[in-house]
Amino acid sequence: MDTPELLLARELGYDAVISHHPHTGLPEINFHNVLNRQIDKMVEFGVPINKAQKALKEKITTLERASHPKNFDRVQSFAKLLNMPYMNIHMPCDIITENFVQNHLNNRLKDNLKATLKDVIDALMEIPEYQKSPVKPVIRVGSPDDYAGKIAVLMAGGTNGGKNVFKAYFEAGVGTIICMHVPDDVRNAVIEQNIGNVIVAGHMPSDSIGINILINELEK
Image (tube, rainbow, N blue to C red; front, side):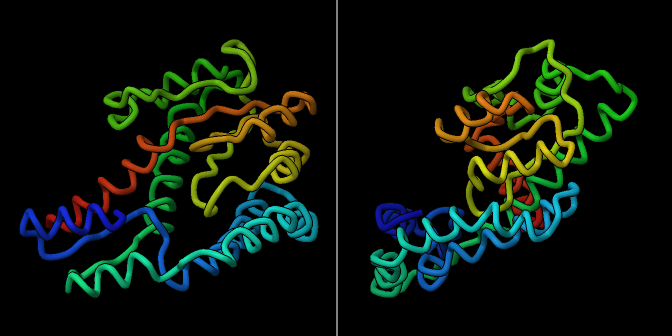
C-alpha cells in the first residue's frame, strides 16, 4: 500500500488503509532491529544463542546500511496530506502465517518419520491460499524423494536471515527450512553445504494466510 493505493482508496471512498508492505516511518529505518527476533527462533530449534547472534550479524549490518538513506516518511506524509488514516501491520501477520503453517505441518506429518519433501509439498497444498495461488510451493534445494527430517518454518523474521543463518539451523539438526523466498546466494550456499533442504512456499500466498486471518477478525 504505497502512494498510488492511498489515492485509489480515497477515490473509491474507503475510510482507512492498512498495509502489509511497505514499512514506513521509524520502522523503515529501524527495520534491521526486527531481525533480532530470529535469535529466539533459532534458539527454539537448538542453535546456541551466541552462535545465532553471530550468524545474524552480517545481515543486520547490511540492512542497517541499506535503510539509512531511505526517505522513510514519504508514504506517511502522503497519507497525512490526503487526510487518510493509514497503518502498517507487517510482523504480526507474518507470525500468524509462520505459526499456522508450522502447526499444520507438525499435525500432518507427526506420524510419518520418513516424510519426504513431496509429502511436505502435498501437505502445504492442503492450505487454501496455496491451492488458489498461481505461485505454488516449490523445492529449491533437494529432491521430491529426499527425507524432510525436522522442519522449520521461517516466515516471521523481517526478511531472509542469509546463508549463515540457514547453515546454523541445519547444523542444529533441522533437515528442511520452509520460507517465503530465498535469494540465489543463499540457495547456492545451501547446495554447496549439502546438509539441508529448502522449500519456498511463495511470498504472496504465504502473506495471504496471515492477512486473511486478520481480515476475518476485522470483519467480525
